Image 1 (tube, rainbow, N blue to C red):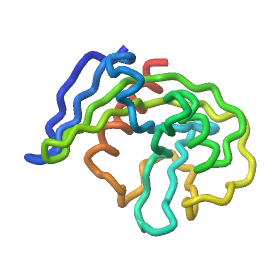
Image 2 (cartoon, helix red, strand yellow):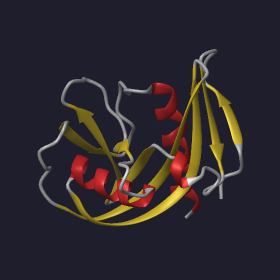
Image 3 (spheres, one colour):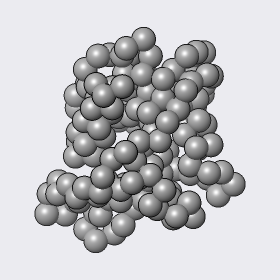
Image 4 (cartoon, rainbow, N blue to C red):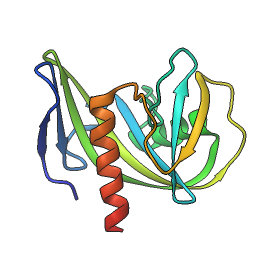
Length: 152
């Protein structure tokens, strides 16, 4: 379990890591998934960007965070079977605007072709590729995921 931790990224951006379940389900709007396949991470590149990120996306009105994580992992990586765990809830403050999400870890067991989506390509690698789309959050989340791997 991850304790509550504030991480000041810059004067305008602060990430607060919170225990799982701290954020009420109705307030969660976003999921991020650290997906691991054969001891390597899966990163994605949006069609309209040249930068890399972890699979992620918005939670739809009809689904919970876990359902959104499974859907986004499929849409962005083609994953059809995985073992998924919640690592932490988080709050991001960007110039005073608050956003709430949940970070998942997924051990990918089976992946099919990449479905038609906003994703231009995926990269399976042992290291975090650069540049990152959201460098501050990317560094925090990848660090948490790597710590989780070392501890399990």
